[in-house]
Length: 279
Image (cartoon, rainbow, N blue to C red):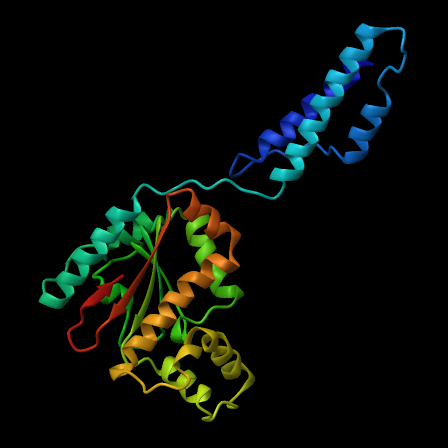
């Protein structure tokens, strides 16, 4: 009987350990709580055999601990951080923006050999969540080339499940250690939301209404105040709100930031100068 319990415990331990591997090619043993209950009920129950009782209790505790570990780790996947630390990645972006504003752009990074190399996979050093405005392309603004940054663009940096899942993928599967939430001056989505807060037109389409509804809580504080020049104060508030909401709505991102490996930074693009301001 103890042999049977040892085999069950070994299977439980194998299942628990398999959750710490990012990818496994072998199916996990099908160990259920019913197995645990059967194992517990099969323990010797004789009061006259103290040694057997002690061994049985020890086995019960081990089986219970293994079962609890499986429940706590089920569905969780460990993250393998990419090779570029967040601070180094941030430095690359800042240097790239300097090259962009001074007109000294790189000439490498988009050759046939680069394309061939990237067919084997990607390891972008940063994730950029920015507005879809055609005047603010992150690859150009930061002078980054093929495979170097992972870009997610939505009007006004609006969030939905698709956007959050895209960023989670960049962190969890691609190993990016830096997330940049970047707004810009004179953002149309920010201005439209401010207009809606002040009683302007909102009912353009269900999709548009959903976008405005996402931005409203971040801009509610400006409902009764004059708009700042180029809506810059309001855009900063939106960027800060998006950074906060990413953590509120994603356990994966919370865990990654809590680990100290992943960092979220806020940025603002200035149209005329081309410079990116950081917070």
